[in-house]
Image (cartoon, rainbow, N blue to C red; front, top):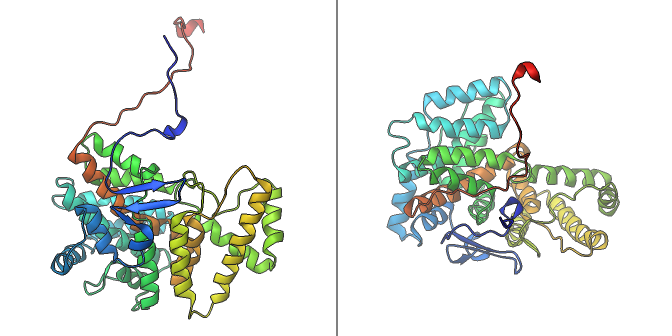
Length: 378
C-alpha cells in the first residue's frame, strides 16, 4: 500500500471555504468579509463588524440600532453563572478557566442550545460580562451590572471599573476587538467548526474554542510581551535585553507568526491605534519605548536568523494598546476571547449552513502483529 502524504498540524491543508476572512501570509494582508482590516477596524463599531460577519454586509442605521438592542438585552448574567464565577474566584481559578466555565454555563438559559443564531448573540453579549464580573470577584469587588445605553466596547470597560470610560480608550479597545474578531482557520476557530460539524450546539463549540485559545501557542502571548517591555523599561537598554534573550536561545515575544512572512497587518492597525491613543496620554514614553523595541528586535532577528523574516505580530501591539486603555494584563487573553467569539459564532453558523462532518485521518506508526498473552503469563 503506498504511503499517504501527511501535513503535520494540518499546515497548508485547505479543508473548506469561507466568506468570513482571508489571510495572505506572503503579502501580509487580512481581509474581513471583503474589507481590508486597516479600513474596517479603525472605523467600525464592534457591533457593525459582528453584523458584517453574520450577514455579509454592513447594517443601515435602523438595522444597527436594532442589532445593538438585541445584544444589550442579553448582557446580564443569570444567578447560576454568577454563583459559578464566585466559586471559581474563591478557588483562584485563572481568568481563562472562568471564561470557559461561564461560556458552558450559558447552556442553563431557557432554550439555550436550540437555535444557533440565538446562541451566538447570547455568547457574544455575555463574554464581556463574564470576564469583567470574574475579574472584580477575584479582586474582592462585586460585579458591575451592564448598561444598555453603552455600546459593546464601552460597556466592557465600564463593567471592569464601574466608571464611565474615556472615549479614547473606548475607540482603542473597539479597534482591537475589530482587528482580532476573525482570522482564518486558526486553532480555536477550527476547534469550533469541528465540534459544530458533529451537529453539536454552538455553546459547546464555543466552549471548546475557549479551551483552544487558552493555550500559550495561540492566545497567550500578549501578557509576556508586556512583561518583556516592562523588563526593558526597567533595564533602560533595549538592545542589551533583547540580545541577551536571543543568545539564551529564547524567543522574542511578539515577533514572528505561523502564517505571516512579513509584518502582521494587525500589528500595523494596532500600532496606529496606539499612536492615536497615546498622543495625549501621560505615559506616551511607553509607546516610544515599544517602537524602539520593535525596531531593535527586527534588526537583531535579521542578524540571528537571516533566513527568516521575523516581524512584529498582533500580540506585540495588543500588549501596548490594551495596557494603555486599562485592560489588566491578566485579562489580555480573555479580551481576545471577547473579540474572537464573534468570529467563532460566525464560523459555526457558516459551517452549519453547508455542513460536512470534519473527519481527518492519521497515519498509524505503532506496533503490528502482537500476540495476546494472558495476564498470568506476562
